[in-house]
Length: 66
Image (cartoon, rainbow, N blue to C red):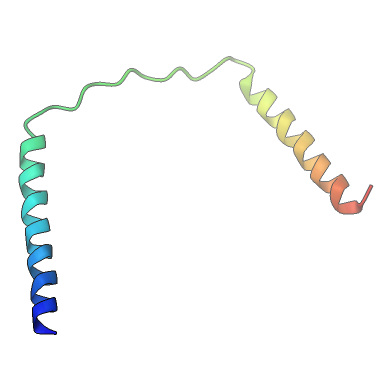
């Protein structure tokens, strides 16, 4: 039982060391900038609301059995 606990403890220590090493290596490389996403067409909010209203009406109708 002690051997198994020792193996698990050694693995966890090794894992922590490798995470620290990889973190220090990756911090040397800056993250590339990502372009901002467009907010979408002007009327997309109304279309989403209408689609949700239709989905709610369909679910309500299905629950009624009609």
